[in-house]
Length: 516
Image (cartoon, rainbow, N blue to C red; front, side):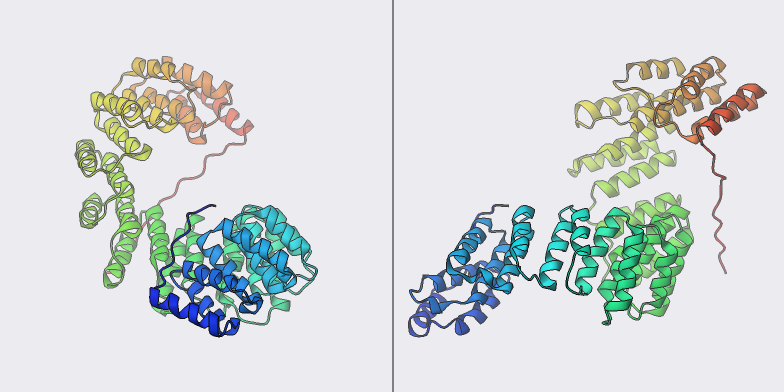
């Protein structure tokens, strides 16, 4: 990546001092500490400026291999590719390239620059790469999307890996879902790495979570000698994302009670997501009160959006709107969440009011916003408004309709009893109707008892295998036939479901018990 070099911010007095010292005593032992400090500062371009001054001195004793490692680090920080290539060329001419520190610095520079071929050539040219070299190439390949190649390098290591090496290898295993290899790395960690490393344990925890092995993750979590906020957040997020929301909330409660680590933004978002999935309003309110008790947590951005979403999913629109009004910086996520919530609760007109305010404040709508508006039109019987929204979405805001938007339009016509219009709309669609659209038409047929259109839906759903057909849609068709005492037709649909390996999951409900 080529960036325009930043100008150094060294003052005239500092520049004069550098020149004076270079003339009187051009010893790198005097200048390298300053060079390192500049590179590690918020202005690493000053380090490159000092490096240039040191190399311009006629004496070769004004710099050594540490000078080049600092300069390459500055190039990595500033993404100065041309300067890094220049330094590489100088190293080849000066004979410094055989130094292992310089080789590792060059390797790191090319990896940061995203230049995998050059990084691979540097690594291949190293006669005796050390653990830093191996860790750099494995980490670089993994981060740049070459996870398979990273693991091949890891398995060919001829030096003992350290905790950083294992962290990078586990990251590649997580991305590829290589549970068996990751478990082998876990065993290697137990046998070979004596040091206690929270970062390595967290990498193992993240690996088990991403591979869906939550039992192994919790076993590891319980046995960890030291746990930080990342450890707690990883296990909570793992349970929440796997649908085990009760476990996620339970672990969060333990986290707060034990006080081992203080929840951060990611922790709170994960546990609020779990409450949303369960529609657990009382638990969500308890987490809300905890957030209020934390003066360092601000109800803005991601946390504010997570709270709004939780109240919407729990059906408490009054609180969702109240939180929305207190959020200082309302973005597309917060606006779309409330619009969708209002639509879900039959408050379509209020959703349009909020949509207007959103436009006034310069927030551009996206596909989720329009999905909420169309849903509100469907539930509220607002046919004309729905048609205008659908047209504006395409023609004014250049948002391409997706299958869910088409489904909302068919549902809107269907709920109003306009089944012919719904079928005509489907025929005019630029793409072939999929499961959500046919499911909306089927639901309308059931509401209005239109058996003639049942047969059209059945013909498509049963005799074709188009994508997007959910088990719920087929089950609805079967139940509709059964309610009309058409048992033969109902059984035929069920036979089709069985032949496709589809099975309707049993329903469940969440009940919150509150102690008073």
